[in-house]
Image (cartoon, rainbow, N blue to C red; front, side, top):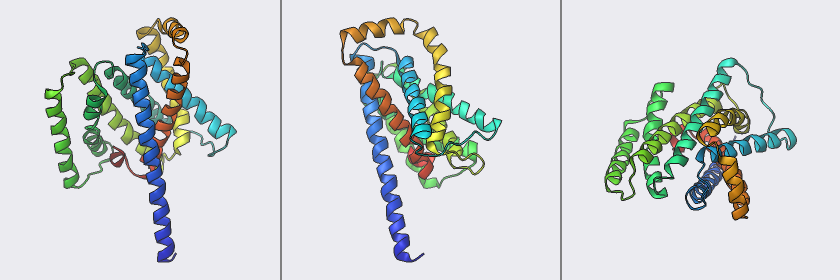
Length: 266
């Protein structure tokens, strides 16, 4: 391959990854703002059920994209250990999203995102213990002011709430663990799945995990949601858009992880 062809290929790859990152940013911002709007301003106080809606949309849209639209070939699960990793990813993902949604009930979006900025620290930690991958010391050094900044911000935040902070920090750690585990499933030779197939297998397991949690912790959810739907005629449309954007956010998250790395993602 000539240097001109290599340069063209590199530019295309860079443009593709940049497009994925823009999609991921846009989807995440949309989901976050709609989550906050539904949970805090709309009277929709059911973060676990909201997460279940997100994962149901991911399962349905992934199935349609693979089976009917044939955007990518269907990949079977190769082994029991691979299935256990996907199941673990689903459980950790549920914990991270539910924890983040619960924290939004107690913390402002801005402070929630400030705490979320410590995700690279946890990602580097988990990546080292799970894959024995060591980054350059300058990378670890760059994480120190981020963590220090969150500590300072926590002390001066007027809307600080201990329970909300603990849930947000737990969600951040779970999100980092999820990034490392999904990186293994998407990139390692023995496990490699494409992003859409991983989302297809992960989402139904997440829904199964969330159903009992909804029944135990949010038992009156259907009654209240039907009542809210009658009062606010656009609620169902917002919930649909929110769930569709969650699919886009999760899929682009996997794609960015696959084409970069877990730490780069964070």
